[in-house]
Image 1 (cartoon, helix red, strand yellow):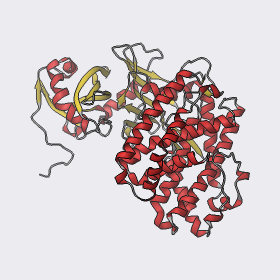
Image 2 (cartoon, one colour; image 1 turned 90 degrees about the vertical axis):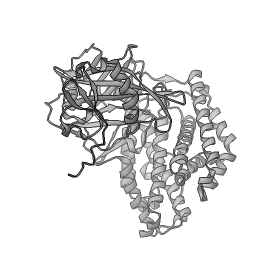
Image 3 (cartoon, helix red, strand yellow; image 1 turned 120 degrees about the horizontal axis):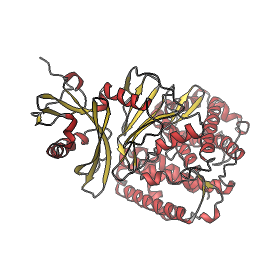
Image 4 (cartoon, rainbow, N blue to C red; image 1 turned 60 degrees about the vertical axis):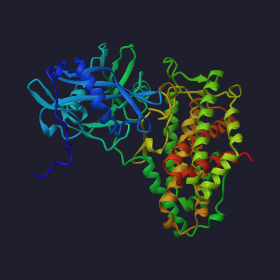
Length: 544
């Protein structure tokens, strides 16, 4: 008989005499489970973020029951300790099944408990577990004070459970679509604090009525042994969409670059504009509109509007101290400079150690980056909070085209977890809202260059000419976005500073973002290092 490919080769079942309901209280089982079973299992999971380091051992930080009447699952909070002397925490829900057909995915351990034989598996694979979590959230009491807390938004009117399925292949979290209307996101990497995605989603939906993010519907959290809130899962509205803004922008840009030949555009005669010059669509020269079309600029205006409305919602709070705007101060400056200088030195080391992997323009720009390192470092040190009059807000923190859904002519903003490299505390630091704008501008830059790299042979033009056209287009994108964004922000009295301050902050944050990106590209795809390196050069050159 043919062997099922999804069924792994297994060792003899672990044997114990305690029932499932008492299993996690059995010290002998827990010891074997953590050292002999979970180390190997966790290492193979997509959501595990510690693969670049050496795992030393796993501790069970704590466990809790996720249950409804007689139906019991366990939520495990695992502390993964590394040889490099740091640790990470992960959430793993487990279930026991005796039916082999329910144990085809994510088997963790074959086990015999008394006269019961079966498997311990990752519980998210069981429909019964997904149903239970949905039903517990849907029927949650408004002020749940138990250790395991289910919360339902007052604005959410749930129906009965019908069905559920996985939402695509995700890396860091596991998302489940419920009834085709809701999404439950189980956070895998967890923190001893409320998850920023939960905080921001609930604040924008419930407190501010911001419509262009998936509505908050509910959550699952626990109070850990230190009495700290730990967010385990977030439930939100499923927004109908045609994919994310990254894929949409790549398609639009491919059409625009194909127009260079189709419309016989002379790149050397395209009118240019300075970086950060605010432009209404009327200010965009007809040659640019003829080349790129009007539609893309109208879309940019809509995205700028939705971004401004998000910042207006985040900047209009006067009660909740986690969201009340703050001015710049000395503590923020010290925090920022320490962070910047540490990151910059890290990127310098990466570039110096990987020069042999670069060639052509990437190599040329990397040499220039190293030659100008003192100039770039000085840019980061030159942050003087006393000259800044604007305010800092809670911001998205990792704002790029991949975090935005396209729905017809509109956009919806997702995933407020913050920058993956940052600590949970750093993700909650109030920042200038222009940090998000710098993030989306860097994403525009990436999209332009990704289009050129992916379709260079289709355009029948030298690479240097395509880069020149891309840089021109990128500046018009920024100009049109800025005009709509700043006009709306100022109309609602959100203080982002005067023109000189705004340009200083944009350059600072875009330089930070480009240096941050450089680490990823040098490690993962050196051919693409030209994108952040070109971004760094263009920001530095703007003042020369």
